[in-house]
Image (cartoon, helix red, strand yellow):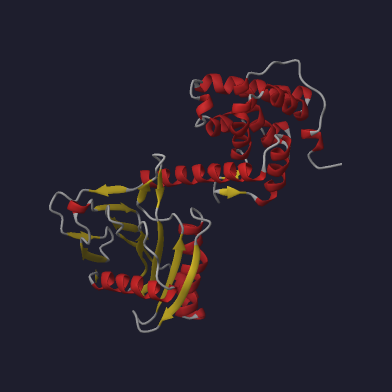
Length: 348
C-alpha cells in the first residue's frame, strides 16, 4: 500500500458541496495534512498563503478563513481522502493548475525558499492524482518557488533605505564610520543607492551593480581566522556561507565558475565568479509584454581591513546578442572592476 493511498485513492465523497474556488483551497488543506494530521492545519496560515492567488481576489479575509475552517472540518469529520475526492470532483478544468499550485505552496520551506526534500514524494503523488504531465507540473513548482523568492526579496527591500542622488550628494560614508567613497553612479543614468544595515549597494539602469557587505569581526571569528589561516577562513565565509545564502537561495541555477585566493590583495583576499542565469538586476521586455531578467556574471571579493570583513560585489550583465568570453576572461574583467572600485574606498 502506497504512503498516500488513503489520501488520493479513497473512493468516498462528502455530501458537502464545494465550489471550484473552494476546491482549490481544499487541495491546499489536503497537502497540509497529508503527512501529518488535521491538527496541523492552521486556517490563518493557509489564508496568508492563498490570499495572493487570483482565484481568491474577491474573497475577504473573513470569507477565506470561514471557508478554510469548513474544509478543515470536513477533513476532520470525514477524512482527508474524502476531502480530496470532493475537491477533485468540484474542480473545473481551468482551475486544476491553480489547485496544484495551492497544494505546492503550502509545502515550500519559507526559510530555504525551496521545496523540502521530504515533501517531493507528496508533490509527485498530488501531481499524479490531478493527472498533470511532468512538464506542466515542473513549471508550476518553479513558478510557486519564484513567487516565494520574489516575496522574500520584497520583504528585504522594505528594510532598505533609498538614498536620493539628485541632492548633490557626491560621497558616501558608512553609518559605522569605517569607510567613505565617492558615489560611483550617476543620477542621469538612473543611479541609485540602496542601504540597509551592513550593506550598501550602488546601481543604475545600465546594469551597474557595486555592492559592499561589511561587519565587524567578532572575537570568535577572529580566533577561527587565526587557527585556520586567512585563506581557509575567507573561503569558508564567501563560498560556503555568503554565496549560498545571498545568491543560491534566490537563484538555485546559479553556479560558482571560478574561485581563487589572492595573496597580494589586502595581505590576502578571496575571489569567486558566479554564473547567474536570469540573475541580473536589470530586465528586458519580452514580446509577450512580460519582463525577464538578463543573464549575468557576478564577481565577489572578500577581504579583511582593520577590524572589519568586507565582501565587495560587481555585476556584468549580458544584453541581447552579447556572448560571454571564457570564464578566465570574464573573471579577470570583473576582478579588475572590483579592484578599481575598491581603490576608491578610503578605509578609516
